[in-house]
Each structure stands twice: as structure tokens, then as C-alpha cells.
Length: 374
Image (cartoon, rainbow, N blue to C red; front, side, top):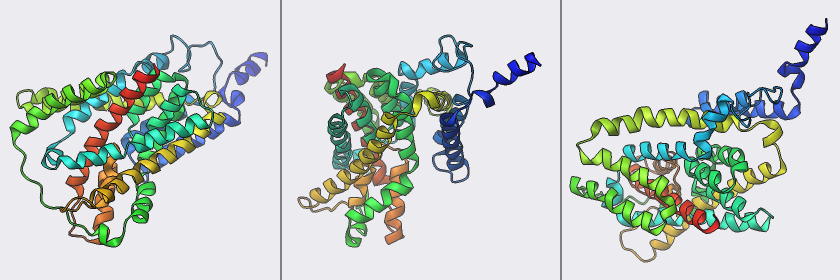
């Protein structure tokens, strides 16, 4: 009987408290959204299942939890805390990105820059609410809507906030179909949403090969701290465009990025142990993340409307919403909103130009914040 009682007191059922139950419910919601609703399943399914794994209660000191030295999860989490997984993801993203639409219309890059205003507004808001400067910067980067960049910067500046920041960043990326369309419709008129973009010019292979070389020099000289992200991003793109390393490019955009995404999502989810994750700071981060993402969306749209005051070839302001770096979710949503007004209006390729510039912009912002606050 004594052994039976000892066994029962060692089970997770006995050790669980309300915090574990809450986080298990959150994990199940993530898994549901990823599988049933198909909201960014490649992100939400690993993260949601990781939350379930990370919130199974256990005795401390057994080497089981993600925060316990020498545990398996702790070693897998090493790729998050060092920034290895985000860099690998950026390598794969580069190998999948086509910059043709951006090169065909470079002024769309300005919309990607404008959308980063959400980062700096949220930085000031977080400081005003009492967060330390490094914590505020980690929260602010959520406004870029780039999960790997958010994780990378937080790992460098405020490692204790990786769980809340990552969950907030990926949650809002997955909820793009819910968050962005109302903002787009609120800030644009039907006449603006009906604007057709002129046909893009054909971009030569030489231009596509030269761009990642020039891009890595210009961006990394501007913000050297962005090298771990943009260095691998432009390298992956060069593998894709150079034409002599297709095997490497294929591996980067399939096996490598898929492996990194699995471990990144699983370990980030597992880091949300209820006794560590459920704090007032986490709630504040989630609220500030929503504000950051909304402001980033609105900033891109408003800047597009301002640009239209000075140019003859008008830009559809909806494209400004794709200035965040949630690739390709925000570009797809811009296209869908435009097609609801006019089924013949194809905005996807133009939106991808803004989207890809947003990836670069958010990584540069992360590098600048890191260099200032390190």
C-alpha cells in the first residue's frame, strides 16, 4: 500500500495544478487551430504539441524538464537559446524566396520599412509600462510578425521571455486572417481597394543573382548584428538563384528548414511550463504583441496612402499590410481582401514584394536593437 501511494504521488495527475491545466488547454487550442482550421499548421501543430509535453508535471531533479540541465529537451532547446534554429530557418526562407517582384518594383520596399513602425512604438509602450530596456526590445520585435527573428533577439537580450514572446509572435502570425482584414478595410476606401497594380517588368537572371550579394553587403554593413539572420537568408537566396547549387538550395528549403521548424516549434512550446509561463508579464507581453502587430499593419497601409499623394502610378494601399514579415500569410490575405472587391484584381506578387522586404526590415531592426542594448 505504501508503494502504491508513493507511485500515485509521483504521477502527473497528483502533481498538476491549475496552471498546468490552463496551459494544456492552450496547447489543445493551438493543435485544434492548426489541424481543424488549418491556421499556419506548420507552426501551430509543433508549438501546440510542445505545450502539451512541457506541461506534464514531474518531480524536479529527474532531468526531464526543458529548464533542467542535461535533460533531452534542454539539449534540444539549446538551438533556441543560441539562435541556431532561427538562423537555419532563415537559410531555408532565403532558398524559397523569389525577389523578382521586389526587383521589378523597388519602391514597394518602402512599405516593408514603414511596417516596422510597430516595433518602435511598442518599444516605447513597453518601457512606459515598466519593462526593462532589453525586455522591451524583445517584446517590440513581435511587431515585425517574424517568429524566428523574435526568438533570436529575445534569446540574446531576455532569454527568460522566450516562451511568452514566441507564443505571442506565432499566435498573431497564425491569426492573420482574423486580425489584418478588419484593419485593412477600416483604413482604406473601396475605391482604393479597387486599384489595379500595373504589370511587373521581367527581371533578368543576372539581377536575381546580383541582388543577394548586394543585399548582404548593404544590410549587414548597416546592422552587423543582423549577420546571423540576414547572412544565412541571402546565402540561401544565392543558392537558389546562382543555378549551380540546386541540390543545396533544395535541401535548404525542404529537409533543413523542416527539421529546424520541428525542433523550434516543439521546444518553444515545451518552454511554456505553467509554473514559469503564467505570470503577469506574460499577459502583458501578449497584449503588447497584439498592439505591435496591429500598428505594423496600419503603418504600412497609411504609408502607402501617403506615397499615393506624390506618385502617378498609384499603389493599392492594401499592399502596406503585407509589409510585415509574416511570409506568405499576410501577402495571401492582402490578395484575398483585394479579390473580394474585384475578382480580377491580382495583388499576390506585389504583396510578396512587400512581404520579402518586411523580412529584411525586421531582421535589420532586430540587429539595431541588439547592438544598442547588448
